[in-house]
Image (cartoon, rainbow, N blue to C red; front, side, top):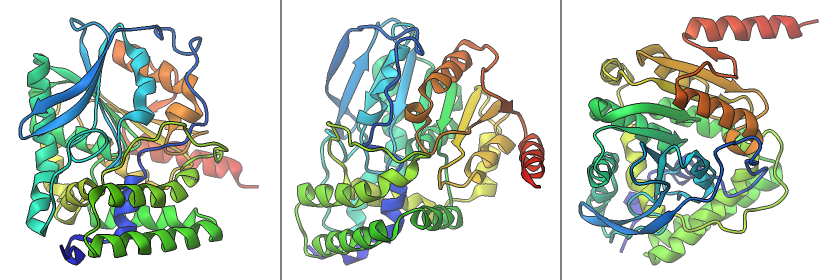
Length: 359
């Protein structure tokens, strides 16, 4: 198999993949998250449309459903298991997207085969998952790439979304994606840049030579591991014991949507999403704030929160404030963190902060 035409841009795709973390800075503590307690767990392979997806289903089956959509593209659900503390008030459903994590793989022998791993297929998987759960409306919590997928699902099926949490992510076109990648690479140390280039070259070589998916997934994760630490305000000192498996071809297929994503046209679809939306962004992350401000401009009922002491993973760096904010939003209560309802409010606050810091 000659896969040269399938590698759009190794650096770009891998940078996007870094929305999923494998490092642990801090775990949410029971005192900060009052609903944390032992809950029934049901997990295994679920037949969803044309594939088998790994699903972890936590909490009472009769409770309102929160579906957790992980980052990547090509990541897995493991780093977001902290959200299981939302049970028992909610039935928390985490899953590995098609072609990644513990879900089934697709055979990729040509560029056309990537259509089975496209954004559109992932949107329809989410809808099929909702139907399988038997709920008319679900709450979505998406992180990084998963936040973009959650937004795109909400635009496609607005009538089935109860609430929407966009955690450090959102849809992006090519210019925004390139801006994010450039900012992320700039945050690497010289040693990390050299190691990342070396591992990217190895991944590229293996993909072009037709290496098996298990090897490509492993090499893909090795590149990402070099870049994970720079996503935090304070670089973590230890890796999580359980990292799971990545999905290299899934990352290639899912990421292709950004080539043709039309921000102006999609903005009209966002205006039809009436569900309340919580948008969050970490001060230290490389992903541009514009990614969230675009959503703030166009979602009818959205509020934006900036986590000042976090990078891309506020759930790990500021767990108490993150979970207090998330719980308040889900309960329809005032948020403990400062929130903004418009781009103008954000810009005014940012300008005031800048002026206040000027001697």
